[in-house]
Length: 68
Image (cartoon, rainbow, N blue to C red; front, side, top):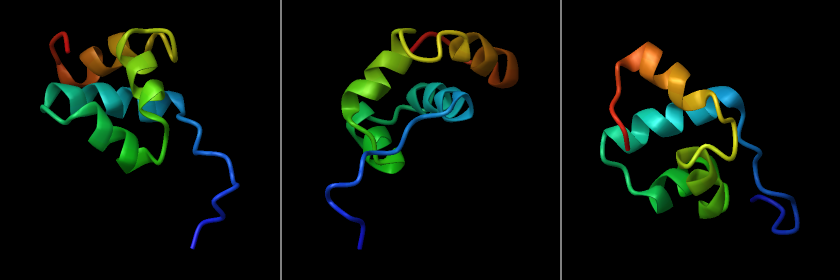
């Protein structure tokens, strides 16, 4: 069992690229946050470009995604 006092996972750039792909596939932000064990605010930061700001462009390059 995970230590409840341990900090949440920190999203990497690669995780952020994956977050964009998941959003394009229709995942809910809360489910994505649970998948990565992060606060839902981190997913919102990725989505809006305040965390790993170039991840959207990289996800679009890799997957040809659309705006989430």
